Image (tube, rainbow, N blue to C red; front, side, top):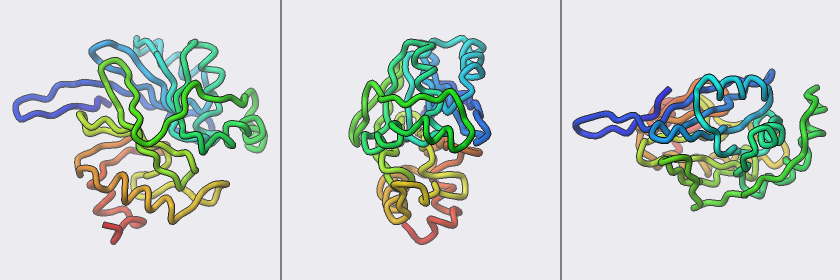
Length: 226
């Protein structure tokens, strides 16, 4: 897919993205890059690091950072291995998910996943922070509820976001895991995401992406929230 900036007279491609479903969870690890510089970021490398590295090579981009939306094993299981292989920093999530990153080995064992390592990111993220890759800048929205430290990466210029497991096409993140809270998640979505424009498109942590407008109109968990 290619997130795009739209103007009255033209559509100029600013970024490219490839989704890499990884592990038995089929988590949407995402390779996102700036078309102008070919600098790239890997978002949520949950595992299957050799597959991720082959995809990077095929795309012909230069990965500069790893970004994490939250600390669940299916999103972070390969982060330490990929950081060591590429020698790039890990950025995110919010520090409220530190307890999850301290339990990566244990969580992996519970799901039969081996080779995982506990780690700390090189930078924690907070509401109001921003991150850049090439010429692309993303605002950070702290959206707890699925996990305490979940964050969303929002590029306002392109009208594009990566929302992790906060919001899905037709659903929302589960809240029955440690640190999850349904009311908190609904509050995050209604206060941080639904005020965005209808045409803001997003990639989510599992399954097909969507747009804010589509979810506002049809997501059964959000009907009546706005």
